[in-house]
Image 1 (tube, rainbow, N blue to C red):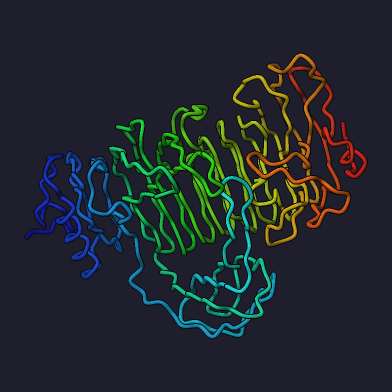
Image 2: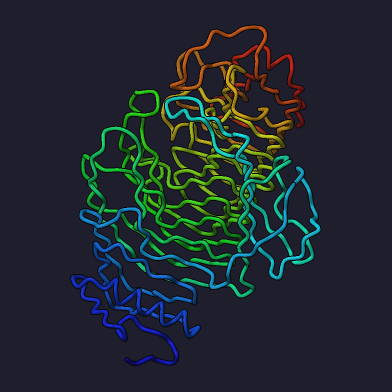
Length: 497
């Protein structure tokens, strides 16, 4: 065995890099050695490493340079489709912390951990995100994630009240950033057949180490056929903090259908980028092709995150599936046919960006179309429905007050629009201008039809103030508040020259 300049190579542990030989056992051994001796890893730039069918996972705990090496992932025949190929992990052991209660927006704890740590808490006695529609379910346990500093301070506002905590996991945050650079990965897509339910695939890079940056990585998907099942995300981060993706290339996945929870066909979400319970998730200069190709699912999904920033990215969608809190910022980005989706609380800012979704912002109806906070739109362009014929509604909210999502729901309290250009030139014949808000009483797509009554058991709080400045449309038609006349009476509109 030989090491070059104190850099571990895959070839030193038997990798061939000819694109045919299964190099995954050698890659696992190389990273195990690097982790034990705190050494970086470097791939051979002209190699093509085949990652075979075995259920093996290479643990990455040191800097890794994949540069221009290629990696082939054949998912047509595997031992375990849920086993990750690489797991980016900390070598620090989890901590036991004496936290019994938490209050919403609490900023300090009388706990002094040995390291700053990422904390996940749950109260399994309460259920939230009780989903509505074709994928309806009984919700998930109330949960939060946050950073607990050594001085007891909290970063990542606590979203819920916890009179009891039934689960707590504290993972130390490594002080030294870890960087993974380069790599050109190609997945030959799975051909799994399963008529009912979802069966998510991994065969990916799983990130649970805080302070990790992935740079210059590209992932392609080829070989999709008429049958297949969805992917959780090739880059998948969970239960960690300070995760950055920089200058990465992602690929949209073909849309497959299954029989959903109510016994009806439903499209399955399939992702290339995924984040769960991440505090401070950032993407810079990340991109993909064909962002208006409706045969491909939106490329990214996130759940339960705190503070998200996308800057200078070109993607088919950005989504906070089961919530984000704190700051949610889209800056200098281009988002395609599935647009910008949001659920959560805090400040949602979209600036200097071009969006192609049917709505400029869609607050997900399957989770109550709720945003507890403000929305700011600044110096943006919107081409509704990728330029297809439509009657656009800028803010899509659909909550008729007839479903219990596990929490009170509301539109953003205040919305500020300061600079927006809308290409509404392709519109129906009767069109007389875009709507700022969709009709929230419209039954969400695929939901059960429930007769509306004056007394709504789960009332939906409406927006209070809409500030508008410098809005222009190609049609020249003046925007309206909403097809729902009630909104026009409730929302205070402040228009400025």
